[in-house]
Length: 100
Image 1 (cartoon, rainbow, N blue to C red):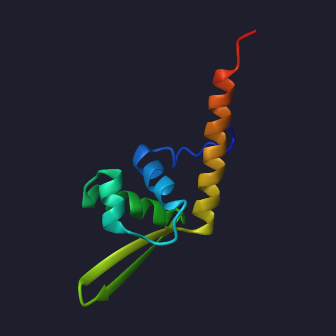
Image 2 (cartoon, helix red, strand yellow):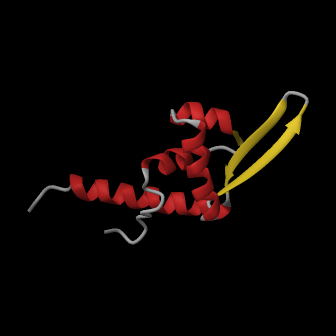
Image 3 (cartoon, rainbow, N blue to C red):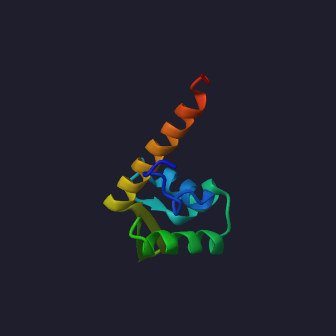
């Protein structure tokens, strides 16, 4: 297995969240929930795991329209995602090589 392959990030729900956050700054929780097509509780569980691992930062705010939760990748999370994506690309490239 590729040494940059991240078993923790490879969990489909986590990988979907991290891939969605990668090109963005702060992303609203509800947008992530809708895009990843999951429930609040399932997403909260994955966000907690990603946050505990140091991959995602959570910001909670309150304004006249209510409470809002925003998410973003930490520098550590961004680096881990880039390493994992590169590992996946290498695995796919190796699978496409003709057998000799």
